[in-house]
Image (cartoon, rainbow, N blue to C red):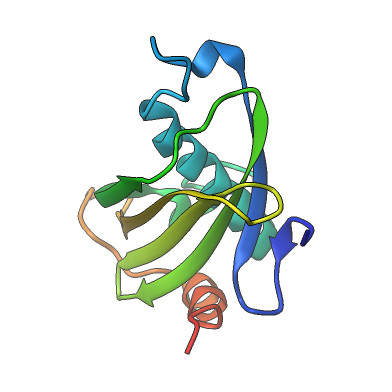
Length: 147
């Protein structure tokens, strides 16, 4: 089992625990929690890559984003309480856009519970219009695009 963090294959791994109170009427992880897990995992990746643990755009302008698109496919039900390994892969970096693919896996990677992609758009904190990533953000994320 790979440890969390940046991997040699340019993926980023985050383990998130699910809990009994996240279940739906069937006793499986409620669909809304997959989106929350993606958000949390991408924040962990941002902190690791950029070295800033904040959601304050005055300190870290690259965190001022809106979600443009989420594509999520549920494959195998997750029955909490358990650990889920999220595997993030940067697919595309554009001037103000970032698309990250996410796999929801068992900790040993044997089960693929779901797969998703999430595209965010960086916004200017004053005009609230799309704005280019910082050079540092762009370079660090482009370095993770898998060939």
